[in-house]
Length: 187
Image 1: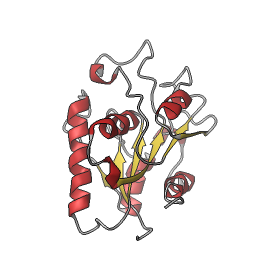
Image 2 (image 1 turned 180 degrees about the horizontal axis):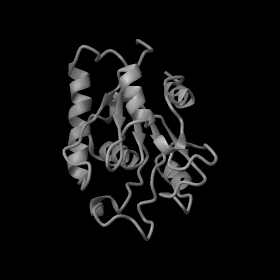
Image 3 (image 1 turned 180 degrees about the vertical axis):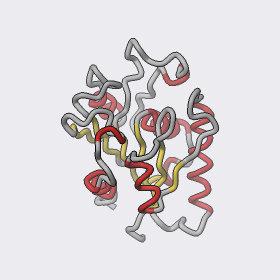
Image 4 (image 1 turned 90 degrees about the horizontal axis):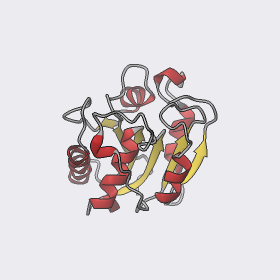
């Protein structure tokens, strides 16, 4: 099996803009962003459909022999959990990097995200690594570690890195890329 993975990028609510590590990875490594129909008022089912279509397109495309990794940020982490719990194609994924999953049960959860309020707490059928920050404003209670346990994922704290986005000053984030590639170590 080729070790150079194909990577699907799964941004969170409002997408990942300029300077975000996902945007930089897309431009530098050629990773594929899974575009959503509505970044501002996302519906979980719609997002799951887009991810399903992207996974099937990979399986039917010229890169099908390459292992498929998911690199999710924020709400994209919850997308991975919801999709994996329902898809018959989750076995096509070799691993997932889940960065800064928000606490969907925070009191100030945005009202435009009602379908995301209840997190899926089911073990993922592929290796996963959850990375979180100790000062993430979207996970003030530090529930990322609990989500990692529910998802059967390894959890790693990055210390004080905010929401692990463009404001965190990560740039191309080579350490994040190393974490992503580490998901293939067991294969």
